[in-house]
Length: 388
Image 1 (cartoon, helix red, strand yellow):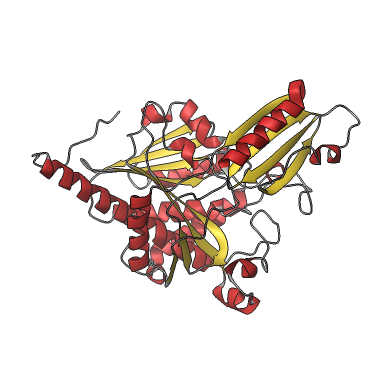
Image 2 (cartoon, helix red, strand yellow):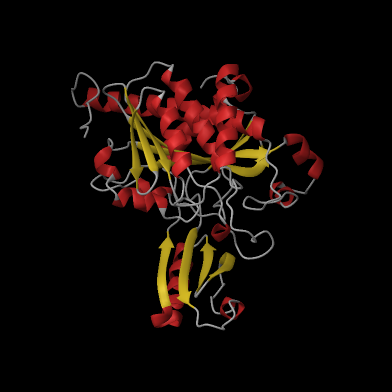
């Protein structure tokens, strides 16, 4: 998308905003995204895509095939934040779901970027993946287990973005590790025991976030680490401590951007989008299961490019002060907090522009690489991929 985010076509933005409003009102928790998935499937079918639904629960994939060339996957998330997805503490009461993490923004921008790109000239295949259950970090794995890799063409790159607490005219990109390792262990709780009694058991050395969530008969302990080895040690300790009381345990590894493709996409964002592009904010304290999609069997692992777009009105950000970027973020409610107040219109414009630009530059970069490779190999042109 070679225009600035402020120049997203008016009619496209209007439709994207209407889609956002509809998605925001649905707000279904992980694993229960039936209405959201139906709405998404209907609107991507309008792009002329071949659509499959019900993958790994309520997952949706849409394939737009323009012939030989690269295969670019773009992912957005279907679920909202349910009560089980929030750390214990203020704001956890209630059983309803709310879009407090921006997945409604992600989906609206994902669709609008695809609609924009479909009006452009390119060759290859665009695969739109609407993933369920990202908040529980189980949806990507569920889609893979349900045969995702055999249903759609193998990706050359997997693109995704997420809103963040930073100015809504800003993009943040990462050259390497993007997210933290997530560790969790669910323990059977004898009747009468207090959940708080378990909080001191988890070793927190090296953890930047630690919490527990209590449900009837069980408590889930969770921690996040930028150091994956520290995460593995924590998980081993939890399993040893829990013994036969361990209901389930797992480690979701950190997400890493493929350096050269991330740099190419960042260059496209810098030229076509906002006035700020931050090359590296360091690994985030959040976790992400996007990496589980990148190597959906029988496919080989594909490179990932993941970035952030801002969600805070730049005027509010400036007024907040703060000695540095991280100090300023603490002036705002975080994602998953019911008090979070996103600058929807500007954030949506930035997100549409970012995803559209990333898709275009991914096709251009991968197509150029394929042509160069085929020229060196004596081939006449790009090799068509095997398609299921």
